[in-house]
Image (tube, rainbow, N blue to C red; front, side, top):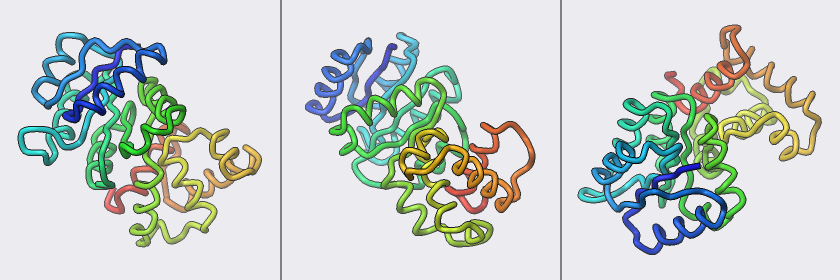
Length: 215
């Protein structure tokens, strides 16, 4: 798998390169700003891009804007955003525009190598990966209808869905059976008034409803 890195911290950039290359990934380019990222994606056509949210010159949302542009112009390139702090608006903005191949993790999560690599692979294969801390903060904020219809356990299941976990992953996290998870998810779909459609599509709709009450 070919991965381009965009991170202005030289030390973190070097660490990511070493981590990925020793884990079997190819890193054709590692750059320090959004313009260089866009050029690298155009040149190398990677499978995924790891992108810092805040990069030169303004250190505001350059990484997010670049990620949105990449997903718009190169939808086959997955994007995993890294942020120093929880900035849930950016997570919601990305997932509202694109429902696959997107991830948002805190930089501290890189220290958990196996979890970080699992998130990268999941995003590169077309899934989503949200940092548990982002999900936790969103859970504290989203209490308006229809989310307040959900039981505490259902909100817990929805939070794990937002992290990008499969039914098996949710079952393992909650120490319950997969059939119990499936029942909770079906209840979530019903309580959120989601239309009957493919299971994967309904999962995305549920997560979007969770991220933004106006979705």
